[in-house]
Length: 355
Image (cartoon, rainbow, N blue to C red):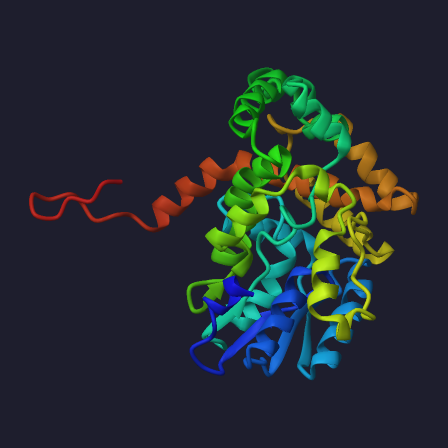
């Protein structure tokens, strides 16, 4: 509450990004309590099947608070959004593609936007498990790093040459050194995730996808609040209900409104799966080979996504991961083409521009 009240809007031209989860509704409830009810809250819909449940919860929150609710639907394909997201975030994130349609709609419309960045880490124990705490407390950091990177099937999509150049063990050793920094903190797992994932990747949704035409307030990363939550023992958060109970205690009048799914896997509709698989296939047809991706692993699984409904959701990680590396591989040629089309002025004694 104190963190949000240090960031009250300067005028009525503000909005809240509203999901079915905890962080956005907590901000909305506190804004209303402080006498700053937004006229409208914004959500993004029709990106994944699970979003239907999210939108029902978000709509219920908006109705209970008397706030108009607008849902911006995805119009671009998941393929196009992933392509855009990789370039737009400078290849620093494997998420946020869902937000671009809403960011486009909001551009220039509001002076201030409230976003729930950081709210799921310390106050809900994001990715926190008893096993991970045990590994951390016993100093078995190599096992902990291996568990945090447990994506063997995902890594199998990479070519042998790339895995030789960047072996898994090298990544794990790098991860172990980072984990050592957080040993001895009350909640080492969430401390690690906050200062790496949130600081390096999650933040790009608030301060890159949402552009500089807005002031974006993120009360959950308020320094005093982060210090307080980080001081709480990790085992307090193992049931992942801390934030739920906090909201219900502060706002019992809204306790009947359910939360959206917690940690449910993302799902695509059958139509979306077919579309993403087809567009990825078209891209592969223009590439004779790849130094980064193993086609012998990728193509059979893409074909299975077309015929096996139970497996079709796998195209989410298959498409996302392969597109990332295919774009990254083509980046030097794209930059060279860009430099040819946009040559820099010739250097002179009075006007020297580094290339």
